[in-house]
Image (tube, rainbow, N blue to C red):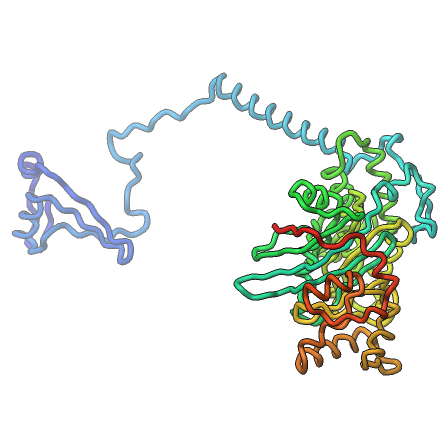
Length: 459
Protein backbone atom coordinates (compact mmCIF):
# COMPACT_ATOMS: atom_id res chain seq x y z
CA UNK A 1 0.00 0.00 0.00
CA UNK A 2 1.16 3.50 -0.85
CA UNK A 3 -0.15 5.90 1.77
CA UNK A 4 -0.81 9.63 1.29
CA UNK A 5 -2.97 12.55 2.44
CA UNK A 6 -5.91 11.39 0.31
CA UNK A 7 -5.90 7.77 1.32
CA UNK A 8 -3.89 4.85 0.15
CA UNK A 9 -3.19 3.14 -3.13
CA UNK A 10 -2.70 -0.56 -3.65
CA UNK A 11 0.45 -0.87 -5.77
CA UNK A 12 0.87 -4.64 -5.53
CA UNK A 13 0.35 -5.15 -9.26
CA UNK A 14 2.65 -2.23 -10.00
CA UNK A 15 5.44 -3.75 -7.93
CA UNK A 16 5.12 -7.18 -9.50
CA UNK A 17 4.51 -6.19 -13.13
CA UNK A 18 6.06 -2.77 -13.72
CA UNK A 19 9.20 -2.63 -11.57
CA UNK A 20 12.09 -3.88 -13.66
CA UNK A 21 15.10 -2.06 -12.19
CA UNK A 22 17.83 -1.24 -11.88
CA UNK A 23 17.41 0.10 -8.38
CA UNK A 24 19.89 2.31 -6.55
CA UNK A 25 20.08 2.85 -2.79
CA UNK A 26 22.55 5.49 -1.57
CA UNK A 27 23.09 7.28 1.75
CA UNK A 28 24.85 10.48 2.79
CA UNK A 29 26.82 9.72 5.98
CA UNK A 30 26.99 13.39 7.00
CA UNK A 31 23.25 14.21 7.10
CA UNK A 32 22.17 10.53 7.37
CA UNK A 33 19.68 10.92 4.50
CA UNK A 34 19.17 8.04 2.09
CA UNK A 35 17.41 7.72 -1.24
CA UNK A 36 16.00 4.80 -3.24
CA UNK A 37 15.88 5.33 -6.98
CA UNK A 38 14.29 3.13 -9.69
CA UNK A 39 12.94 4.50 -13.02
CA UNK A 40 9.35 3.18 -12.79
CA UNK A 41 9.13 3.84 -9.04
CA UNK A 42 10.51 7.36 -9.55
CA UNK A 43 7.69 8.11 -12.06
CA UNK A 44 5.06 6.88 -9.59
CA UNK A 45 6.49 8.86 -6.66
CA UNK A 46 6.76 12.01 -8.75
CA UNK A 47 3.15 11.70 -10.00
CA UNK A 48 1.74 11.05 -6.53
CA UNK A 49 4.00 13.08 -4.21
CA UNK A 50 6.01 15.31 -6.53
CA UNK A 51 9.33 13.94 -5.26
CA UNK A 52 11.93 12.69 -7.76
CA UNK A 53 12.61 9.53 -5.73
CA UNK A 54 11.90 7.86 -2.38
CA UNK A 55 13.77 9.58 0.49
CA UNK A 56 14.58 7.89 3.80
CA UNK A 57 15.95 9.19 7.09
CA UNK A 58 16.97 6.11 9.06
CA UNK A 59 17.68 6.31 12.78
CA UNK A 60 19.76 3.80 14.75
CA UNK A 61 18.06 0.43 14.92
CA UNK A 62 15.65 1.07 12.09
CA UNK A 63 17.72 -0.72 9.45
CA UNK A 64 17.58 -4.49 9.20
CA UNK A 65 20.57 -6.78 9.40
CA UNK A 66 20.92 -9.13 6.47
CA UNK A 67 20.11 -12.04 8.75
CA UNK A 68 16.62 -10.58 9.41
CA UNK A 69 15.65 -10.49 5.77
CA UNK A 70 12.98 -13.14 5.03
CA UNK A 71 14.45 -16.08 3.14
CA UNK A 72 18.08 -15.31 4.12
CA UNK A 73 20.01 -18.33 5.41
CA UNK A 74 23.05 -17.89 7.68
CA UNK A 75 26.21 -19.47 6.21
CA UNK A 76 27.86 -22.30 8.09
CA UNK A 77 30.66 -21.28 10.46
CA UNK A 78 34.12 -22.52 9.41
CA UNK A 79 35.33 -25.45 11.45
CA UNK A 80 38.91 -26.34 12.40
CA UNK A 81 40.06 -29.56 10.90
CA UNK A 82 42.92 -31.88 11.72
CA UNK A 83 45.08 -30.13 9.13
CA UNK A 84 44.51 -26.76 10.76
CA UNK A 85 45.52 -28.04 14.19
CA UNK A 86 48.59 -29.69 12.65
CA UNK A 87 49.69 -26.43 11.03
CA UNK A 88 49.28 -24.54 14.31
CA UNK A 89 51.27 -27.17 16.17
CA UNK A 90 54.09 -27.12 13.63
CA UNK A 91 54.25 -23.31 13.77
CA UNK A 92 54.50 -23.32 17.57
CA UNK A 93 57.19 -26.00 17.46
CA UNK A 94 59.21 -24.07 14.86
CA UNK A 95 59.06 -20.86 16.89
CA UNK A 96 60.09 -22.78 19.99
CA UNK A 97 63.09 -24.29 18.22
CA UNK A 98 64.21 -20.87 16.93
CA UNK A 99 63.93 -19.33 20.40
CA UNK A 100 65.81 -22.25 21.96
CA UNK A 101 68.57 -22.03 19.34
CA UNK A 102 68.94 -18.30 19.91
CA UNK A 103 69.09 -18.79 23.65
CA UNK A 104 71.72 -21.49 23.30
CA UNK A 105 73.81 -19.33 20.97
CA UNK A 106 73.59 -16.35 23.32
CA UNK A 107 74.49 -18.51 26.30
CA UNK A 108 77.59 -19.83 24.54
CA UNK A 109 78.63 -16.40 23.24
CA UNK A 110 81.92 -15.15 24.74
CA UNK A 111 80.17 -11.88 25.52
CA UNK A 112 77.89 -13.59 28.06
CA UNK A 113 79.64 -16.83 28.95
CA UNK A 114 81.50 -16.53 32.26
CA UNK A 115 81.05 -20.12 33.42
CA UNK A 116 84.00 -21.71 31.63
CA UNK A 117 86.79 -21.98 34.18
CA UNK A 118 89.39 -22.22 31.43
CA UNK A 119 88.41 -18.76 30.24
CA UNK A 120 88.75 -17.07 33.61
CA UNK A 121 91.72 -14.75 33.84
CA UNK A 122 93.13 -13.65 37.17
CA UNK A 123 94.20 -10.03 37.48
CA UNK A 124 95.32 -7.93 40.37
CA UNK A 125 92.59 -6.11 42.25
CA UNK A 126 94.47 -2.90 41.55
CA UNK A 127 92.70 -1.37 38.56
CA UNK A 128 95.09 1.54 38.26
CA UNK A 129 97.49 -0.31 35.98
CA UNK A 130 100.85 -1.73 36.83
CA UNK A 131 103.82 0.54 37.03
CA UNK A 132 105.92 -1.92 35.07
CA UNK A 133 103.36 -2.28 32.33
CA UNK A 134 101.61 -5.33 33.80
CA UNK A 135 104.18 -7.75 32.43
CA UNK A 136 103.18 -10.45 34.84
CA UNK A 137 99.90 -11.23 33.10
CA UNK A 138 99.49 -14.19 30.80
CA UNK A 139 101.24 -13.75 27.48
CA UNK A 140 102.19 -10.10 28.09
CA UNK A 141 99.57 -9.16 25.52
CA UNK A 142 100.34 -5.45 25.72
CA UNK A 143 103.84 -6.17 24.38
CA UNK A 144 102.64 -8.17 21.38
CA UNK A 145 103.56 -5.59 18.73
CA UNK A 146 106.43 -4.27 16.60
CA UNK A 147 108.03 -0.98 17.81
CA UNK A 148 107.93 1.66 15.09
CA UNK A 149 109.87 4.87 14.54
CA UNK A 150 107.67 7.08 12.37
CA UNK A 151 108.69 10.14 10.37
CA UNK A 152 107.12 12.18 7.59
CA UNK A 153 108.33 14.92 5.24
CA UNK A 154 106.89 17.39 2.75
CA UNK A 155 103.31 16.41 3.57
CA UNK A 156 101.11 18.66 1.44
CA UNK A 157 97.37 18.66 0.82
CA UNK A 158 95.44 20.62 -1.81
CA UNK A 159 91.74 20.70 -2.57
CA UNK A 160 89.90 22.75 -5.19
CA UNK A 161 93.14 24.53 -6.03
CA UNK A 162 93.68 25.70 -2.44
CA UNK A 163 96.66 24.56 -0.36
CA UNK A 164 95.34 23.39 3.02
CA UNK A 165 98.62 21.90 4.28
CA UNK A 166 102.10 22.78 3.09
CA UNK A 167 105.31 20.80 3.66
CA UNK A 168 104.59 19.47 7.15
CA UNK A 169 107.25 17.26 8.72
CA UNK A 170 107.96 15.46 11.97
CA UNK A 171 109.52 12.48 13.68
CA UNK A 172 108.39 10.41 16.66
CA UNK A 173 110.05 7.34 18.14
CA UNK A 174 108.72 4.43 20.23
CA UNK A 175 107.96 5.55 23.77
CA UNK A 176 107.18 9.12 22.67
CA UNK A 177 104.01 11.16 22.28
CA UNK A 178 103.83 13.73 19.50
CA UNK A 179 101.20 16.43 19.96
CA UNK A 180 99.99 18.25 16.84
CA UNK A 181 98.80 21.66 17.97
CA UNK A 182 97.46 24.80 16.33
CA UNK A 183 94.52 27.14 16.23
CA UNK A 184 91.18 26.38 14.63
CA UNK A 185 91.59 25.68 10.92
CA UNK A 186 95.35 25.21 11.20
CA UNK A 187 95.18 21.80 9.48
CA UNK A 188 95.72 19.53 12.49
CA UNK A 189 93.09 16.92 11.60
CA UNK A 190 94.03 17.05 7.91
CA UNK A 191 97.67 16.31 8.74
CA UNK A 192 96.69 13.50 11.11
CA UNK A 193 94.43 11.88 8.49
CA UNK A 194 97.12 12.01 5.82
CA UNK A 195 99.98 10.61 7.90
CA UNK A 196 97.62 7.89 9.16
CA UNK A 197 97.06 6.80 5.54
CA UNK A 198 93.42 7.83 5.30
CA UNK A 199 91.87 8.58 1.93
CA UNK A 200 91.20 12.26 1.32
CA UNK A 201 89.04 13.88 -1.32
CA UNK A 202 91.77 16.29 -2.41
CA UNK A 203 95.34 15.75 -3.59
CA UNK A 204 97.81 14.68 -0.90
CA UNK A 205 101.53 14.06 -1.26
CA UNK A 206 104.61 13.59 0.86
CA UNK A 207 106.91 10.93 2.26
CA UNK A 208 106.19 8.55 5.15
CA UNK A 209 108.87 6.41 6.81
CA UNK A 210 108.46 3.52 9.25
CA UNK A 211 111.69 2.29 10.84
CA UNK A 212 113.62 4.00 8.06
CA UNK A 213 111.66 2.36 5.24
CA UNK A 214 109.81 4.62 2.81
CA UNK A 215 106.17 3.73 2.17
CA UNK A 216 106.03 3.77 -1.62
CA UNK A 217 103.48 1.17 -2.77
CA UNK A 218 99.80 0.54 -2.11
CA UNK A 219 100.61 -2.75 -0.42
CA UNK A 220 103.08 -1.05 1.90
CA UNK A 221 100.49 1.62 2.67
CA UNK A 222 97.93 -1.10 3.43
CA UNK A 223 100.37 -2.90 5.73
CA UNK A 224 101.07 0.40 7.46
CA UNK A 225 97.36 1.01 8.01
CA UNK A 226 96.94 -2.48 9.45
CA UNK A 227 99.76 -1.81 11.93
CA UNK A 228 98.15 1.44 13.13
CA UNK A 229 95.20 2.30 15.31
CA UNK A 230 93.03 5.39 14.83
CA UNK A 231 90.72 6.89 17.46
CA UNK A 232 88.31 9.39 15.96
CA UNK A 233 87.14 12.53 17.69
CA UNK A 234 83.58 11.21 17.98
CA UNK A 235 83.00 8.18 20.19
CA UNK A 236 80.95 5.54 18.35
CA UNK A 237 79.96 3.22 21.19
CA UNK A 238 76.87 1.06 21.69
CA UNK A 239 75.15 2.62 24.74
CA UNK A 240 73.53 -0.59 25.99
CA UNK A 241 76.75 -2.61 26.26
CA UNK A 242 79.02 -2.62 29.28
CA UNK A 243 82.61 -1.43 29.08
CA UNK A 244 83.89 -5.02 29.12
CA UNK A 245 81.40 -6.17 26.47
CA UNK A 246 82.32 -3.23 24.22
CA UNK A 247 86.04 -4.00 24.21
CA UNK A 248 85.55 -7.78 24.08
CA UNK A 249 83.25 -7.33 21.10
CA UNK A 250 86.03 -5.39 19.35
CA UNK A 251 88.49 -8.16 20.19
CA UNK A 252 86.18 -10.90 18.89
CA UNK A 253 85.63 -9.07 15.62
CA UNK A 254 89.20 -7.99 14.94
CA UNK A 255 91.52 -10.60 16.41
CA UNK A 256 92.28 -13.81 14.46
CA UNK A 257 90.20 -16.96 14.89
CA UNK A 258 93.33 -18.88 15.84
CA UNK A 259 93.57 -16.86 19.04
CA UNK A 260 91.67 -18.57 21.86
CA UNK A 261 88.75 -16.97 23.66
CA UNK A 262 90.73 -17.13 26.89
CA UNK A 263 93.60 -15.19 25.32
CA UNK A 264 91.22 -12.58 23.93
CA UNK A 265 89.59 -12.13 27.34
CA UNK A 266 92.99 -11.87 28.98
CA UNK A 267 94.02 -9.18 26.54
CA UNK A 268 90.81 -7.22 27.13
CA UNK A 269 91.21 -7.33 30.90
CA UNK A 270 94.85 -6.30 30.71
CA UNK A 271 93.99 -3.33 28.49
CA UNK A 272 91.24 -2.33 30.92
CA UNK A 273 93.75 -2.49 33.73
CA UNK A 274 96.42 -0.46 31.96
CA UNK A 275 93.93 2.28 31.04
CA UNK A 276 92.60 2.28 34.62
CA UNK A 277 89.03 1.44 33.69
CA UNK A 278 88.94 -2.11 35.06
CA UNK A 279 86.85 -0.90 37.99
CA UNK A 280 84.04 0.20 35.62
CA UNK A 281 84.10 -2.86 33.35
CA UNK A 282 80.55 -3.88 34.31
CA UNK A 283 79.02 -0.41 33.86
CA UNK A 284 77.04 0.32 30.72
CA UNK A 285 78.30 2.91 28.25
CA UNK A 286 75.11 4.94 28.57
CA UNK A 287 73.53 7.63 26.42
CA UNK A 288 71.68 10.92 26.66
CA UNK A 289 68.67 9.01 27.98
CA UNK A 290 70.39 6.53 30.29
CA UNK A 291 73.24 7.47 32.57
CA UNK A 292 76.47 5.56 32.10
CA UNK A 293 80.19 6.25 32.34
CA UNK A 294 81.77 9.71 32.11
CA UNK A 295 83.08 11.38 28.97
CA UNK A 296 86.70 10.76 29.91
CA UNK A 297 85.98 7.09 30.57
CA UNK A 298 84.22 6.80 27.19
CA UNK A 299 87.31 8.22 25.51
CA UNK A 300 89.52 5.64 27.22
CA UNK A 301 87.10 2.89 26.15
CA UNK A 302 87.47 4.09 22.55
CA UNK A 303 91.25 3.93 22.96
CA UNK A 304 90.97 0.43 24.43
CA UNK A 305 89.00 -0.72 21.36
CA UNK A 306 92.00 0.14 19.19
CA UNK A 307 94.57 -1.37 21.55
CA UNK A 308 93.11 -4.88 21.16
CA UNK A 309 94.90 -5.18 17.81
CA UNK A 310 98.25 -4.16 19.39
CA UNK A 311 98.93 -1.25 17.02
CA UNK A 312 102.53 -0.12 16.69
CA UNK A 313 101.42 3.47 16.08
CA UNK A 314 98.29 4.99 17.60
CA UNK A 315 96.71 8.09 16.05
CA UNK A 316 94.09 10.09 17.96
CA UNK A 317 92.06 13.05 16.75
CA UNK A 318 91.33 15.52 19.57
CA UNK A 319 91.20 12.92 22.39
CA UNK A 320 90.42 15.66 24.94
CA UNK A 321 87.65 17.34 22.94
CA UNK A 322 84.58 18.05 25.06
CA UNK A 323 86.22 16.96 28.32
CA UNK A 324 86.81 18.97 31.47
CA UNK A 325 90.35 19.61 32.67
CA UNK A 326 90.44 16.65 35.04
CA UNK A 327 89.22 14.07 32.51
CA UNK A 328 91.37 15.58 29.76
CA UNK A 329 94.47 15.15 31.92
CA UNK A 330 93.52 11.55 32.73
CA UNK A 331 93.16 10.70 29.04
CA UNK A 332 96.49 12.25 28.01
CA UNK A 333 98.24 10.80 31.07
CA UNK A 334 96.95 7.35 30.05
CA UNK A 335 98.38 7.84 26.56
CA UNK A 336 101.76 8.99 27.87
CA UNK A 337 101.93 6.05 30.28
CA UNK A 338 100.98 3.69 27.47
CA UNK A 339 103.78 5.07 25.29
CA UNK A 340 106.44 4.94 27.97
CA UNK A 341 105.53 1.66 29.67
CA UNK A 342 105.00 -0.29 26.44
CA UNK A 343 107.25 1.63 24.04
CA UNK A 344 104.37 2.65 21.79
CA UNK A 345 104.42 5.46 19.22
CA UNK A 346 101.53 7.85 19.80
CA UNK A 347 100.49 10.87 17.72
CA UNK A 348 97.46 13.02 18.52
CA UNK A 349 95.97 16.41 17.76
CA UNK A 350 95.01 18.75 20.56
CA UNK A 351 93.65 22.29 20.82
CA UNK A 352 94.99 24.64 23.53
CA UNK A 353 95.58 22.14 26.35
CA UNK A 354 96.12 23.13 29.97
CA UNK A 355 99.67 23.59 31.23
CA UNK A 356 99.68 20.33 33.21
CA UNK A 357 98.77 18.47 30.00
CA UNK A 358 101.43 20.27 27.95
CA UNK A 359 104.05 19.14 30.46
CA UNK A 360 103.33 15.53 29.45
CA UNK A 361 104.20 15.98 25.76
CA UNK A 362 107.47 14.56 24.44
CA UNK A 363 107.37 16.35 21.11
CA UNK A 364 105.34 19.15 19.58
CA UNK A 365 104.34 19.93 16.02
CA UNK A 366 102.88 23.43 15.71
CA UNK A 367 100.80 24.49 12.70
CA UNK A 368 99.36 27.82 11.60
CA UNK A 369 97.07 28.06 8.58
CA UNK A 370 98.52 24.84 7.18
CA UNK A 371 102.14 25.99 7.52
CA UNK A 372 104.66 24.28 9.76
CA UNK A 373 105.85 26.57 12.56
CA UNK A 374 107.72 24.21 14.89
CA UNK A 375 108.54 20.52 15.02
CA UNK A 376 110.78 19.22 17.77
CA UNK A 377 111.18 18.46 21.46
CA UNK A 378 108.58 19.98 23.75
CA UNK A 379 111.22 20.84 26.34
CA UNK A 380 113.12 22.96 23.79
CA UNK A 381 110.07 24.92 22.64
CA UNK A 382 110.26 27.82 25.10
CA UNK A 383 114.01 28.37 24.66
CA UNK A 384 113.78 28.16 20.88
CA UNK A 385 111.02 30.74 20.60
CA UNK A 386 112.86 32.89 23.15
CA UNK A 387 115.95 32.80 20.93
CA UNK A 388 113.79 34.10 18.09
CA UNK A 389 112.40 36.97 20.13
CA UNK A 390 109.20 35.35 21.40
CA UNK A 391 109.53 35.06 25.18
CA UNK A 392 106.68 33.34 27.00
CA UNK A 393 105.71 35.43 30.06
CA UNK A 394 106.34 33.83 33.44
CA UNK A 395 103.36 31.82 34.65
CA UNK A 396 101.72 31.87 31.23
CA UNK A 397 100.55 28.64 29.60
CA UNK A 398 103.07 27.93 26.84
CA UNK A 399 100.35 26.34 24.69
CA UNK A 400 98.18 29.48 24.80
CA UNK A 401 101.24 31.62 24.12
CA UNK A 402 102.25 29.59 21.05
CA UNK A 403 98.75 29.85 19.60
CA UNK A 404 98.79 33.62 20.17
CA UNK A 405 102.27 33.95 18.63
CA UNK A 406 101.39 32.00 15.49
CA UNK A 407 98.21 34.03 15.03
CA UNK A 408 100.11 37.31 15.44
CA UNK A 409 102.97 36.30 13.13
CA UNK A 410 100.49 35.03 10.55
CA UNK A 411 98.77 38.40 10.41
CA UNK A 412 102.00 40.45 10.14
CA UNK A 413 104.58 38.47 8.18
CA UNK A 414 103.64 35.10 6.76
CA UNK A 415 107.21 34.18 5.83
CA UNK A 416 108.29 34.21 9.47
CA UNK A 417 105.91 31.39 10.29
CA UNK A 418 108.54 28.96 9.02
CA UNK A 419 110.50 29.22 12.25
CA UNK A 420 111.73 25.71 12.89
CA UNK A 421 111.69 22.27 11.32
CA UNK A 422 114.05 20.23 13.43
CA UNK A 423 113.38 16.81 11.95
CA UNK A 424 114.42 17.53 8.37
CA UNK A 425 117.73 17.70 6.58
CA UNK A 426 118.68 21.37 6.69
CA UNK A 427 120.34 21.73 3.30
CA UNK A 428 117.82 19.72 1.32
CA UNK A 429 114.81 21.26 3.01
CA UNK A 430 116.08 24.79 2.55
CA UNK A 431 116.65 24.19 -1.16
CA UNK A 432 113.24 22.61 -1.59
CA UNK A 433 111.05 25.13 0.22
CA UNK A 434 113.14 28.14 1.13
CA UNK A 435 112.26 27.61 4.77
CA UNK A 436 114.09 29.68 7.37
CA UNK A 437 115.68 27.11 9.70
CA UNK A 438 117.95 27.52 12.70
CA UNK A 439 120.51 24.72 12.34
CA UNK A 440 121.81 25.15 15.87
CA UNK A 441 118.47 24.93 17.65
CA UNK A 442 118.15 21.15 17.85
CA UNK A 443 121.15 19.73 16.03
CA UNK A 444 120.92 16.39 17.77
CA UNK A 445 117.44 15.86 16.37
CA UNK A 446 118.67 16.19 12.82
CA UNK A 447 120.76 13.07 13.32
CA UNK A 448 117.53 11.15 13.97
CA UNK A 449 116.37 11.64 10.41
CA UNK A 450 116.10 8.18 8.95
CA UNK A 451 116.33 9.01 5.27
CA UNK A 452 116.21 11.94 2.84
CA UNK A 453 113.12 12.31 0.68
CA UNK A 454 113.88 10.40 -2.52
CA UNK A 455 110.38 9.68 -3.80
CA UNK A 456 106.82 10.60 -2.93
CA UNK A 457 103.58 8.80 -2.35
CA UNK A 458 100.07 9.91 -3.17
CA UNK A 459 96.63 8.45 -2.67
